[in-house]
Image 1 (cartoon, rainbow, N blue to C red):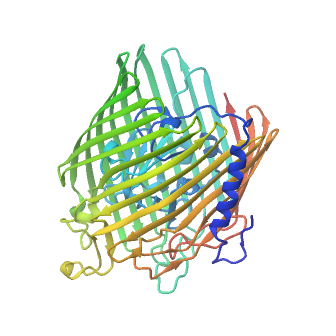
Image 2 (tube, rainbow, N blue to C red; image 1 turned 45 degrees about the vertical axis):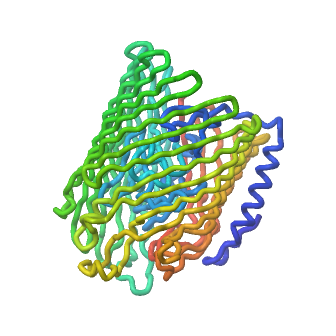
Image 3 (cartoon, rainbow, N blue to C red; image 1 turned 180 degrees about the vertical axis):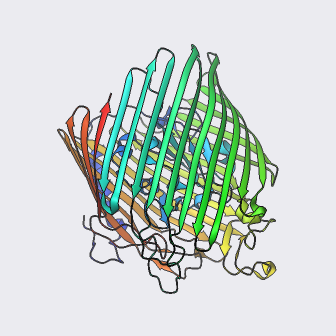
Length: 623
């Protein structure tokens, strides 16, 4: 497999990478005596823990091991390596970023931290640059519309981030230090344990970098500034749980992260932003009867953003308060789930038009059926919002186990997205009559898994109605917005084929993904901004003794920077190298060489990306 890295605007076709990846994965799958991984559990697709082999929706998990070896890349850059995920970024690792799931925009997916929804009600999406990798244990990605489980905005999928849980027994502790190119420095530590009925965990971390100029000297752009635009991110998380009695546990958890980042909005000015993310929750898990489990959660999430720029200062703070009561009732091999949720959103902004609030009351029911080789799930939910009224969504999924290793599945689901406060009320941009977006999704998939290797293929088609788009020149009927606006278009289509393969054999492990997708505005018959037709990744690791070495690629074909197909962003293929060495049972060294070919590419027009860079670190862990 060869990638041409000497031509900065062109990469070899991703189809070559796909053929190699699938061939290697099939070879791994054919090895009947390969190592067997312990069965894993997935939570996000059904709101309760179940074996990943029984999850009908397309899903993926990023493990604690992969996160620990990520170095000082951003969370968005880590997600970019998974199937169905594309990203954009306005500069380096600490800059504003967006994550697209299956072509859905950043604000068309739900992001949770330990079950607590985060995001800004003004922009409508998560502030990815504020979420620290150092506080994350593992990540679950559930693809497709999950509005019938999570309500508004779950059109492209749900990403759930799990921080370190309180230890089940004994004492655990860890610490890590690292340095790298662009003046990057990283330090984090964690301690956890259990004593009797009490479990606890506490972690803290700090990441900082001098980085590079966030902008590039694109013709006609006045925002270029050749200064360095670095960041400093400090974070902490913790949890405590107490077993009151057998089957009854109460607990609390929190996450805090502050990111101070520099950006470019004009020459000769130190533009900077302050981003603050916090979540906190208290909960009770109770088993009232042998087949009845209840979960109560009271939570608050805050997303605060302030900017100090050449065009002036501003702030927009979002507070989300939520209460959830979930009941899982076993009916033989089946499960009935009943959920009530209340969510209140409040915005405090420097623009009085945005300083508003709204609340949503939701009622949901789901039934999970298991009959020999047959699996089925049906879900229905109603969301009653004080601002845009009631919306009912539903989903139906069916799976059949053809053999012990092969399963086929199909599903249909509806979804909707509430307009953000910016799309409704921002002066000169929002329109208070904008309607919620709605979606109808159909998909079918095949999964082969034998414990050591896995192959999956998912074909999907998501039709969106009343899609909200930005236009620099508004339609005639919206002439009152001379500088552009957000407004509903008739229809858009997100369709594609998502493939993945993974396998392990005698120290060698492979993971490959490939996506063919169509993300189009059906009204104009043009591609949605910054979505590629083809993208994917390949990672190959080899372990021998105490040494583990790896090579990975991330690739994408050309995209357009806007929804008018006027500015083309070239395709790219990046090569990253990594290695780790266990010095002792508790000590290890790691090193990463990202973008080893020094590829020049853009994720958004006029914004720079990192060139060839290295990161080295040492880790200590007491288990």
